[in-house]
Amino acid sequence: MEAVYKNIHQDVIDRCKSGEREAQFQLYKLYYKSMYNTSLRIVGNEVEAEDIMQESFLNAFKKINTYEGKVSFGAWLKKIVVNRSLDYLKKRKVYFEEINEKIVDEDNPLMETREIDVEKIKKAISQLPEGYRVVLSLYLLEGYDHDEISEILGISNSSSRSQLLRAKLKLKDYLLKDEVFSIN
Image 1: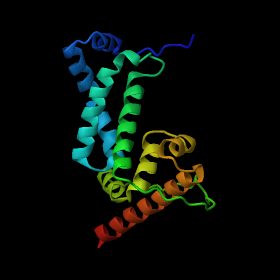
Image 2 (image 1 turned 90 degrees about the horizontal axis):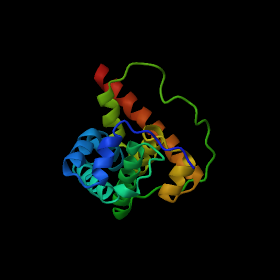
Image 3 (image 1 turned 45 degrees about the horizontal axis):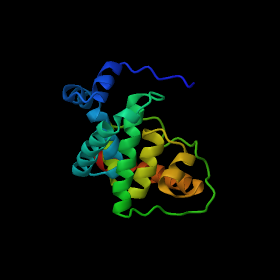
């Protein structure tokens, strides 16, 4: 038998499984902000991210009895949010470039160490083309590896790597341009 994950909010989860509305609201309050941010990083639209997050919670509450505790509840919920966000992009037919080129150096740091405002980074990420933003978000922010990303998005592993590399370069370009303009 697989080990069951010990959730710190297991009592709330159990109460949700029995259909208790107050427990659902408690669980929502615990996770809504991080789930909204996860969706926002993928879809890049505040209104859509809010809708996706709400739908994801409704879906999670409907399927909460399928949660077996093999991973944290947050990880289980995040998977629902990521899948809903990607479904939204598929409906909009986001194009992920298929590129068959060799990656030069994936471990090359995004930028030299210097202080950059978090808001500038968020703004720069939001300016990335959707395909780049999605791969960058899934890889750097959500912790998926290239095999998982290629499976989720239906692209090759090399395309996932290329998208990430190009996203990093474009992000670096945006940040450097912003820095140059803020100095002048």
